[in-house]
Length: 251
View 1 (cartoon, rainbow, N blue to C red):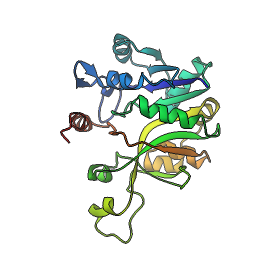
View 2 (view 1 turned 120 degrees about the horizontal axis):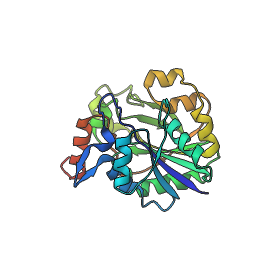
View 3 (view 1 turned 60 degrees about the vertical axis):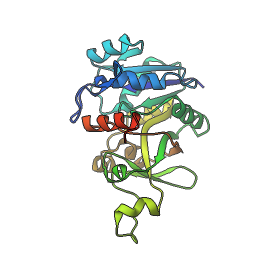
């Protein structure tokens, strides 16, 4: 199985314009930091950055990344990934590494790719991590997930799930149960990615602003593999400041 890794990177963001090129210290941008952490994965046969922005292209090529310019009215990273995969038909599967995930690394991608090789071709694979902070519990930007005993996701939400109906003090919930947050990386078999990129938005997706609910509403299964590695999703400049503190051991 040949696996293509894709980092979709766009300039526009309502809360953090230019996020891929934000400074993270040490002379690196956020995008270079993410690329450098993912590149060593031996299970990815190739890693490319997909963008339609010339500033991002120049910066990425400057640190040695392979870049594909993909222009179009894309609604999400899945469609950008398929635009890349269409140009690279030699790959059997694609890993979408969202340009929000500060701590995603080669070890986590190896776990994702290993799971992808074991699931049916119509199944999507992603990563989750146990929630350990009240910050993640309280933030709607931290996507929560509940799953079956076999590891397949039941539902994703920006709300805390499960709701502990017998425990009125939500600040104690982390002591009462295990909660999981979603990490924004996905593994797809090629044909499944093609099908997903063509699906129209769904009601649950629109309600929660979570694309994976579109897939579940259309009867696609999502397998979740658990990692204990750190995970911080960057949606605002404040999120990046927090992630840098975590990286330095200050939070």
